[in-house]
Length: 426
Image (cartoon, rainbow, N blue to C red; front, side):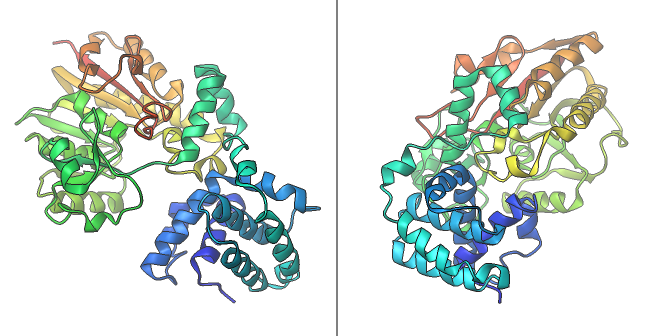
C-alpha cells in the first residue's frame, strides 16, 4: 500500500538518498511526489530537506531507545518523525500516530515494527528540546571534511557545517538592479551586494513582479560572478555552461549581445522560459563546449564550470550522501579543458570570469593559477573584485573571491563559490 501523505513521501525521499544514493532532484523528476497535492509536495520536500540536514541529531536522539537499527524504511520513518518533532516543533500525537501508520503500510518486513515505532517515538517525544540542540551539526563526509580542514582549518570547517544545517533562504536578482525597491515590494531584505533575500517559506510565483519578469531566483553568491565580469551594452558575451540561466539573465539585462551555451537541451529550454518571462533576449546554443567553436572571438566570457557543487550543500543536503571523491580528478580535468577552450575564444583585450560553486581550491584558485602558468598574456584583474558589498576577507590574495557558506552569518549565509577575473592583455 502506497502512503500518500507528505510525511510518508518525505520518508521515501530520505530513504532514496541514504539507501539508494539517488539525488532528491532525480527522485522528483522521476515523479516521486506526483500522487500528492501541491501543498503536500512542498511539505514533503521541506521535511525531507530538514531530515537530511539533521540525520546525525535524529540518530543520536533515537539511539538510547533502539537496541539495534531497524530496517532502512523504518529508520527513515523514525528520522523524519524525530526531525519533525524537534526541528519543526510538531505536535507529538499526530507525528507518532502517522509514523505508526506508515510503518504498518510499508510491507511485511516493516509492519512488525509498528509497536516499536510507537514506543520509541513516545519516549522520544518526552526528551527535552535541549538534548536535540546540544548535538553538533551534521558532519561532512570524510573525503570532503578532510579537504576543507586542510584548506581552511577545523574552526572554519565546523562553521561551514553549522551553516549547512541552517539551510538556505531564497535570493532574488532584480532586473533593473534596484535591490532596495524590490525588497520593499516583495517584503525582503536588500543585501549589500545587490540581491534581495526573502525570509521564511514563500510561493515564488505569487510574489509581485514574477509574471512581469522583474526579477529571478539566484543565490547572492552566484550573482556576483556576472557583476565581476562587468558586462557592457552592445558587447558580444558568452555564457559558457549557462543553464539554469541566472547569469545569462544578468548578462542579457545589461544590454549585451549574449550567447548562452550548454550541453543540456532540457536545461536550456528552462532558461528560454525564464528569458521570455523576464522579457530578455539571448541566443541559446545546445552543444558540447569541447567540440563547439564560435564564428568570432568574444569581448567577454563567463565560465561557470561543472564542479563538485560542494558550495551548495546548505540548499542540497542530499549531496554529501550521493557523491564521493571518485569523480574529482575527472572534474578537475574537465574544468581545465573548458578554461583552455574559453581563453582561446577571447579577443585581445577581452576578459573572462571563471567560477565554480565549489569549496575546493582544486576547482578554484589552483585552476586559475595553472591557467596563468600555461599561457602568456593573461593577468588577474584584482580590481574587478572590489564590488559594492564585497568584504575584504572574501578576496583570496590576488587570485579571486573565495565565498563560503559561513560568511554573512548576520544575513543567513551564502553559497560557497570561487570567482576570478582573467584579462587577456592586448
